[in-house]
Structures are given as structure tokens and as C-alpha cells.
Amino acid sequence: MALIPESAATGTHRMPPGPGLPRALQTAGFMFFPRRFFDYSRRRYGDAVTFSTAFDSRFVMLFDPDLVKQVFQGNNEQLRAGEANALLGPVLGERSVLLLDGAEHLRHRRLMLPPFHGRRMQAYEQTMRAAADRAIDSWPAHEPFALHPSMQSLTLEVIMRAVFGMEPGPLDDELRAKLRAMLEPVARPLGIMLMLFSGRLRRGQGAAAARFAEQRRAVDEILFAEIARRREDPDLEERDDVFSALLLARDEDGSALTDQEVRDELLTLLVAGHETTATGLAWSFDLLLHTPPALRRLRETLAQDDEEYLEAVVKEALRIRPVIPGVGRVVRGEPFQLDGWVIPPGVELNPSITTIHRRADHYPDPQSFRPERFLGPDAPDTYTWIPFGGGTRRCLGASFALMEMRVVLRRVLERTELQPTAGPEKVQRRAITLVPKNGVRVRMTSRNSV
Ligand code: HEM
Image (cartoon, rainbow, N blue to C red; front, side):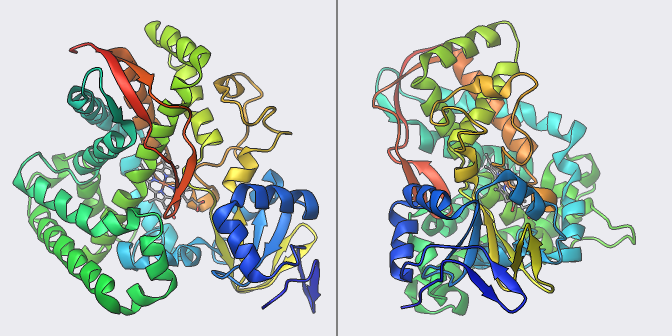
């Protein structure tokens, strides 16, 4: 079994220290008690720690905002997020912005950004509010139900309308059903991860991989037909969904995204934007319902049409319960200088979102849900609050997600009274996200009709 020396200096490289434990033990630490393992490692070795697990024989986790800043500001040809995200290739397709690096990545990002900014965003607000109303109307009165699945349907509906530009009807139903069938294994706690780690999915081996390929074909058939239909649509320029904006987007030299690229980016926006936002919302409700003073203050400020505290609630929820635990960048080309360390090509750097958000020096009493941290001039900075990653790879849908969380929280509080039916939720890992273990069970004690 491989051992990692406590501090490794080989030739011109100088790796940060790390636990000298067998890989199997480090793997167990990551899988079964990550939080304690990271806290212990940080105390023992410092803010940059080299680990070795069954999934990666040598990688460096970063626990400090200044180190994270150096990584997020690094050159994107040298620090490659696309390579770190390669696991998602079979689902998203190789032309997804999440999987590309360097100049190709920047080109896709530039083409995708406009619909996520300015006036276009305002058009989505109404869609989000209507989806919240439909969810609220579907909840049973006075009976316990789980909020997380309801938030998943809600955010899927928002993506279908705002991103795909689908109207309710048979095509919308069919696409949703096929997407759900394809993505269902991704949502299982370890399902697709195990297939991916073993390489079976990539090579198309085994019954599960064959089933997945079939489901992906069914989704692609609908998407490619829809791409062809929209390209011919005389009203394309009048539409305000992201799908249409992707079809219209042009480089400086006038070239457009190909059909395959549009398909890959649509799936990317769906996969990156749907479960994540639903989980952020579920955690926000869990935290608010178990922190009565914060809930009271939120209701009072919203009654005066003041959204400053609402914004702080959303930020604090994403701080204390980040949906994605960390992000990755693989070093390529020259070794990467990180403070006094020299990280060789091939090694992945992982800013740990969870650990940085728990640092008591930046967040006093870090386990308490205190939205007040985000009010006033001392609010945490760009490298201390990183639920959306950072640099040229920062989440493309961050403003979209933050707006959706604000709109839905506000609408639910305006129209309903919810009571928790159990204690605060425990964190469970599901694929690449951290979700509430029991789905945030609540009871609705009152509901206004509008
Ligand atoms: C609370 C909800 C969300 C969270 C916590 C979240 C988090 C993240 C994180 C951590 C990354 C990786 C950033 C990095 O490597 O530095 C990312 C990337 C991305 N996200 Fe989000 N996200 C959310 C919602 C959304 C939404 C709503 C969309 C779109 C509709 C979206 C689209 C994307 C895309 C396209 C990327 C890839 C960006 C790139 O590689 O350039 N996300 N997100």
C-alpha cells in the first residue's frame, strides 16, 4: 500500500505535507468522516495538505482563502478545471463548458454569458414566481411532506421554461420524463460515481452503461429535433430563453455553436442548475425553520419590502451548507508555484469550500446560522465565501441561482406557514452534492390563496 511522506520534495517540486496513512485509510476518511478528517489534517499539516486516496493517488486540498485566491487567479491553460470535471463527460458530452479548458472554454463561456445577465434575467423572475406558486398549491395542508423533492420539481420546471424555453404540453412532459430516466442514476448516492470510477460507463460496458446509453440517445433525439426546429423558427430572435440565445450567439468572427455544442450546453445547464438550486433551497428552509429569530427577522423585513436580510439569509445558507463541497484544477505545463510550494503537472488542487466556510477566524461561531454576518461592511470577501467556486470558472448560473432562491423563499414565506416535523437535517453526500438526509420534512399549517 502506498504511503505519502509527511513532506515531499522531489527535484524541483515541493509538495505540501500530508498524512502518512495508507491510501485505504485516507479513502475511508474521505468517504465516511470527511469533516473530521479535514479538520484534523488542517490542524496537523496546515492550509495546504497532500492526500492520497483510491480515487487519486496524489492531490492537494486547500483550506485558506489566500491560497484559493492564487488558484482562482491562476492561468486557465495551466490550471485546468475541465480536466478535473472529466467524470461528468458521459452525461454532459465532451463539448460542455464544464469540461473544456483554455481558449475553448473561454469561447464557450463568452457565448453563454449574455442570457445570464441584465435585462434577460428579469424575464426569468416571473417564471420563478409562477413555479413557486404551483409548488405551494400542490402541498398538502396539515400533513407532513418533504420539501426537498418539491424543490427539485420546482427548479426543474424553472429550467424547462427559462433555459429550454419549453411550454407546458406533451413535448415538455416527454423530455422531462426522458431526462429524469437518464439522470436518475446520477442522483443516487453512489450509483454513477462507482460506474464512472470503474471506467465502465466511459467504455460503454455492462448492463447499466447500455441502459444509460439508450436513455441518453432518447434525450438526444428530442434535443436535436428541437434544435433543428428552432433554427428554422422565424421568431427565434423574439424569444427570451437561454436555448434560443445559444442558437443566436456568435463569435467575433461570426461563427456559432454547433448542434452538438448546443446540446451539450443545454444538458450542462440542466445538470449544473437544477439539483444544486433545489438543494440550496431545501437547506435554506431547514436552517430558517430551526432558527426562529432569523425567520422572524426575515418575515418582518419582507413585510416592509426590504430584501437585504433575505439576500443575507441565502448567502449564509450557502456558507453553512454549501451544496458542492469543493472544486478542482489539474496542473498542466509548468509546475505551479503556490506560496512556497511547487506543484508538479498532473496534480489536482482542490479548494475545500466546506472547510473554508467553517473557519472560525473568518466566521466566528461557524456552526451557527447567522445571516447578520453578511450585512454591513465586514461581510466575507470573494475568496472566503466560495459556494460558486471562482475565477474564470465561477458558476455561470450564480446570479440565476441566487435570484431563484430569493424569489422562492419570499413567495413561500408570503403565502404559507411551515413547521418543521423533525430536528435539523444531517448532511448526506449524493453524487457530487451535499443534501439534507431526510428531505426536510415539514407541515404546512396555513396557506394564502394568492
Ligand atoms: C445554488 C446553486 C448552485 C451552486 C451551489 C453552484 C455551484 C457551482 C460550482 C461550485 C461550480 C464550479 C466552479 C469552479 O470550478 O470554480 C459551478 C459551475 C457551473 N455552474 Fe453552477 N451552481 C449552482 C447553480 C447553477 C445554475 C442555476 C446554473 C445554470 C442554470 C449553473 C451553471 C453552471 C455552469 C455552466 C458551470 C460551469 C462554469 C465553467 O466551467 O466556466 N449553476 N457551479
